Image 1: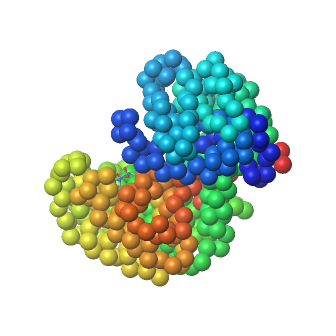
Image 2: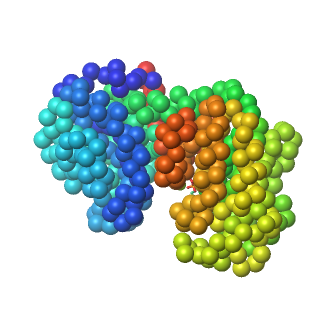
Image 3: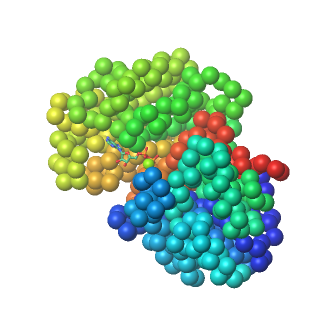
Length: 412
Ligand code: ADP
Ligand code: MG
């Protein structure tokens, strides 16, 4: 894969696909980690005299056509403003993605200046399943620039026009963030130091079943099947489907009953492959899903009717810390509780602290997990790497090819 460093960019127009999909509360950015992670590449290109155009998406615009989506938002305006602050120079935002305003914005750029395109998902073609439809948008994006740099790791598992089709139309290279992410994930997938402990949490088990299948060795092996974990600690909303599969009561907790057969298969696979699966042994529950809900500890795996599990309990926190204590490699994806509500954040803090004491390779993946640990104010070296990509890092761990990476590797 060619590196952006190796491109001669002075005076050239460079289209950078970044991942700036930050969590928002209205128009306020609640965690700017992804913007900061994109800075090394952008600073480098600007300092070398490139005319930089940043293309990114934000949220999930709704509506059938461009006009409806653009009217509904979200606009990248707050992101462009934050990027300008961090870069220390103006970052004008085009009023469209690849139309008249984008062309005028690019035409107004001098070497060493940067601008942004509006939310690329205002263009329904961005996420189209139809190659020709995506190709048409890719053509308009490519016409804006002479070079393409892929640095949006968090979007690289998507076959989207700006991620996959556009780099095929321009001389292209990988940015620093992508190169850093791939270097770390490659270490996890090639003979990790053992014990290799994986902590999975988050809301839905369906998002993570494929990676679980690989980590317990029950997925059909192919040349790129990643190594098995020694231990799998499961918490968060997905734990309730596991507990239900084992016959426990889960009360009103988030449950994906239709996934119970797959979960049962994964548990059997783990058993056969000698992968230790550790589930919560107690919970912090409430009677409603709300920040102000009264937390209550349930001292066993079963949750009474009328209550929902929102965090792991104190015994589980200790158990997980003990299961992490001797780890030499850790991958953590998905918060073990609803950390957004302070009364239910203790489990996430405990897991983050336990991992921060591990000497060895420790990787946190996932937008929400990364945002959670940044808010905990742990020391900067608490983890080896905080990945910006949730789905992308999981798919990499599944041994799947990421379309965005494949496109950057194409033509070399
Ligand atoms: P990531 O973005 O790190 O991959 P996910 O998107 O999979 O993580 O999951 C994050 C969400 O999971 C958080 O918003 C958190 O509130 C939620 N979550 C964690 N534990 C629970 C639970 N017990 N019940 C409901 N939601 C939960
Ligand atoms: Mg998430």
